[in-house]
Image (cartoon, rainbow, N blue to C red):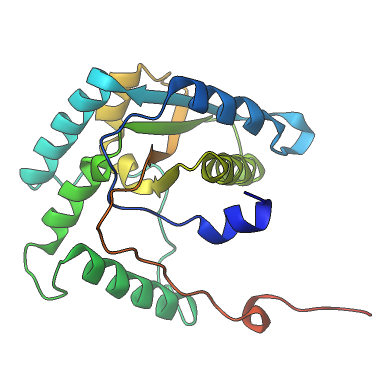
Amino acid sequence: MDVYEAVDSRRAVRAFSPEPVPREVLDRVLTAATRAPSSGNLQPWHVYVVTGEPLAELKRRATARALAGDPGDEREYPMYPDGLASPYADRFAAAAAQRYEALGIERDDPDRPRKIATLNSGAFGAPAVLFCYLDRSMGPGQWADAGMYLQTVMLLLRAEGVHSCPQVMWTMYRTTVGEIVGADEGHVLLCGVSVGYEQEGVHRLRTGRARLGETVSFVGA
């Protein structure tokens, strides 16, 4: 699979097979991902790879919180800015509508938040979840570095025939995640990335993208 195919086929999968991803595949991907760029070569990320019984326990605890209507831990950073305006709010609304339809959750379902939280807390059935942390002393530049690192990981997973789903939702249950992985108090959870093979026979959601002219301007020849 070349890099263009990896980019084109990467999408947030929300229905995973229970088939485990071999440890050697994860080792190979995460070793190669160390070549991701970072300003000053700080490599500011720290990743916990959770599988097996620890992941099962994390899913149980997080799902119990979701089913109980727990609103989650106090956020350490905003998921989206306040007062999201057009065109960003339009893109968000369109993608959300597609996503909920694919998951079979009606827009006006009063129980929608709890259903969504429950699906997320189960990592959509993924047999592995990567949790990416950064030292609390890091700034916006290092958060951008972590984003480039995670994109590198997700593209390398596609080269191995594996899918993923980045989930900021896990920050809602950061204390539960921290208890399971033994995270350093000096680190902040950026997100989790569910990893696995796609479940067969499910609806494959592919959200649209803005046209090139909406997000790119060419200056010069």
